[in-house]
Length: 396
Image (cartoon, rainbow, N blue to C red; front, side, top):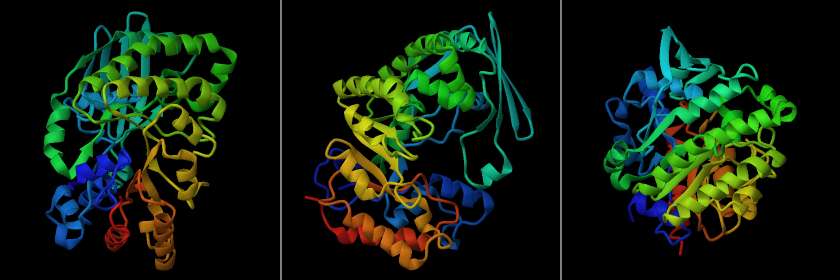
């Protein structure tokens, strides 16, 4: 089987010739290439060359957020909009005027509407570049006062979403059988989640939702059209799996909020994607205690970036038990296991062996490092994990 065939079969809980081992190495590669610290034998190698040498699949779930057609598009991260090739839609402003000012590592973006102006400040620092990070940090969020919600609603209603699969298809052709290019539908899984995750400071959001629910929910309603159009574009694309939503956590997205404002949209997205013959993936990186049941109930096919103990409370065995036969897992190994300063050799061996012991018949799992491979990772340990995966044998 090719890496792509193996990943798809595992996500569909079908037999595979061996366990898929698909660690996310893009940030590891960017960091070490930028710092000049790639291993000597790979000094001039591409990421694809290194993956081939390691015998691992290409991880194409989370995009390179700096891979845009126009440099000013990077600033739209302040809106939670990412003009990346993984998305088979092109998003434009109709009447809103965007201006971008750069001052060293800082970006100030302004959105001028007939009703007023929204601003945000973003950072991409030297430390971030040395770590391979491509997602800009939003230092100053868009919503600063209650009146800004109406402007956000108007801005999202101004967005024009066009089905434009060209860059996505080119990426699929480039990756080929080396991996599964998951289509990107969005970093948030509902309008309310989008406000919480991207546009409003966390504490302010919860105060506003409690004190002024009509304002928050009316804004969320005005954002729905944008999310549905992007999902529709993903449904129309050749993608076999689509990522919708990311970064849940027991403290930030607690069960009451999840049940009311996130789960219904995951279910809605799942219904759309399943009708189009596609898998729904959501990026569950975070503390998912008490949240796993929502993924199952909402029809999520794949929980991506599952990060187990010791970095979170739940073991991989507990994840497998709670997600059951409905939701497959992508991840399953914590990223610190490949850091010799964080885990001794004995602890590393125990962590990976314990993960293999906890997966039963091995169906429904693509192993990876959650959330990503750190820049200081031991290449020997990455190879060792591959050997241990191979020793598991075929999954019937």
